[in-house]
Length: 556
Image (cartoon, rainbow, N blue to C red; front, side, top):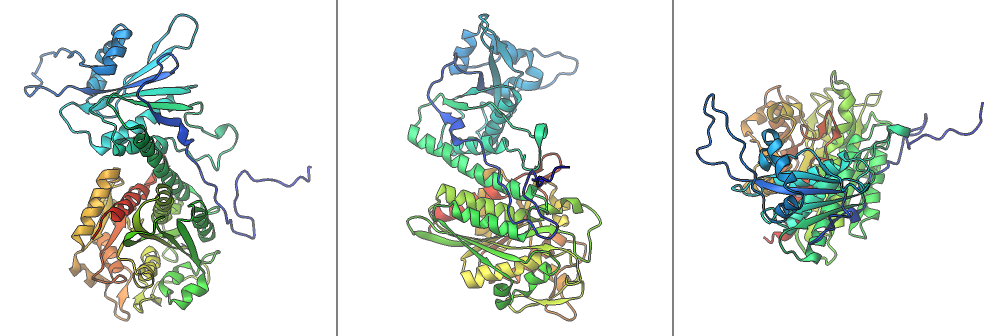
């Protein structure tokens, strides 16, 4: 038997020591996606042609028993030139696939790949038509994101593909926001987590792809367009990190690992981010009894993470706080979970979102804003030291809390994080993201996050960021009468209410730890943070990044 020391395929714990490092997945090089006013058809493996369907006639109705003729496709511009050079082959494909493609009426839909051989032994050229919606409808952000993701999925499905050109009709446009959204969606859609796979189980998306050229049919400024694509790439870097954190298992990701991840974010920020980590003694001096109670049962000590972003020029319009729930694994504590425990690595989804946003914020070099990204990182585990139901703990604002349920732990960690952001840091506005309640998942499903705030302006800002990024949110009420559920017989407040309105009472609980006059929003992302078929979704990183960007632009 060999005495050679075994080397694990990834960094993890040992029998006696916890893991302290987590590998990061990086996007494909930023050079893959570019923009040009022209391309060489002969030197391109795949040409994707964006098309809008004509508006449906007002009298279009299905007459019973009457077979309708397939309408002729209406294509123009560069798409028409390509079609003519191919002897009408593109029009034929559109007609043959009308039932599914509808001439492009459904944004993100594609035709089967058309392969054209030159007959000289060279590789066949491939053509795909990409639906962009109908001519009479405005192009929404959701359509643009679908363009980026469909380009990525099409390139991935075509094996041994090295080069691609994408024809963008004038209606799609080539504004900076459009190009940024296509870029971020393109790179994000190619994410795959291979950190824990070995050998032939490793999956590489679009493995041979080296070039995708966007070809707008309208004029554009090259420098601005290049900057817009670079911005999208930087946003995707935050998205990748968010997915990496949520996907990581607990034997890799704990409070120490997350603290080192935060340090790495600061190290790569070119001096724009400063990282501060508070240990248990520093937290105890601040009276963070609510947060520390949750972490008592864990192998690793709690790590209170504070990343401070300041713009290069030092000009600041707004000082904001972004809190993310950082429970790296949630057993439920002594109120142990009886379902879904294998998914409780995603209980750090809020922390993952804001740390991804911190990375993107620095990469984008956002102006006009001082942003504080704060995570009270710990694990909710069980041992002889762990807190139990009926404990009464004291938060750093002096409020006493009766523990009605140890599985309502996230709000306890964030109570002290909110006090810190409000009182010690002095943030002018605060938002908080957390995978907080199953009740929110029941109310809004798996695709929409809940926004709860008393401040209409903040609600409007977050709604705007949501629409701009495609990360869906819905405002829910903070019904003040529900505070009755949180009353304790022996302490200032309980950490849980009844089974009814659980998402709302969680938000009401958190309001006790921020100045009532200060704009504050609780965002419950329990539903959209995870997809059972693909894993981590990266939800929240883009939303937060966009909100931070807008705060820097807004002078009040």
